[in-house]
Amino acid sequence: MLNRTTLARPYARAVFQVARDADKLADWSEALQFAAAIASSDDIEQFYGDPRVDRQKLLALITDLGGDRFNDQFVNLLKVLMNYDRLDLLPEIASQYEFYRREAEARLRVHVSTAMPMNDEETRKLSERLKARFGREIDLDVDVDESLIGGAVIRAGDRVIDGSVRGRLEQLSRQLAS
Image 1 (spheres, rainbow, N blue to C red):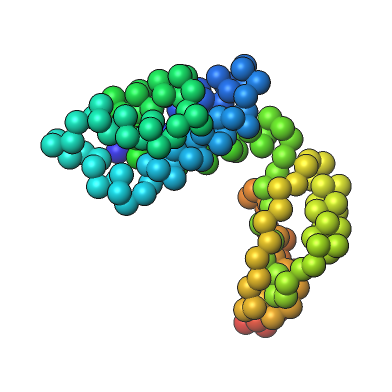
Image 2: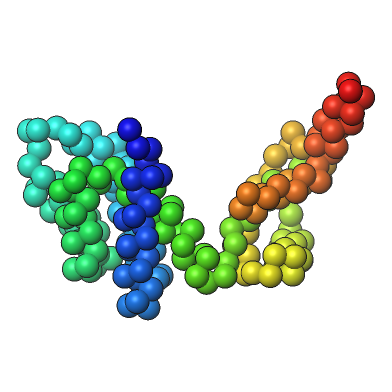
């Protein structure tokens, strides 16, 4: 059986192409994020695969909740997903779409875990350094992980830069054990 990522990929690519051709990347991003939130809510998930639930009524409920966020093309996407029992893929489709969008806009999502909170100036400087290193605009997410003891761990795509005290201690431990 195919996994969710594989199943969602063709939908995400198609949606991205439609959004890019219409120059509506941000609008589609907002609609996908909102629809993904609706589709992954417990109130909606309980109806997936239930033969007693009329698909058209479920689709009408979702489109009503989306309101003005969902244009006709987006509603057509929802109809296709509903028809093929793929509505539950919306969160994965939205995630993959954001990846394609960041690539097209030369943006990179970077997650930083620090031992102590960073102020706005430190965050701005780090973002500038990362932009210079990766040659792309940076979407920076920062959180605090006190278990790091000191320093930070930076995750950018498939790259990890571990500048934490905990990481250095673990590395030293591995070297001593060999």
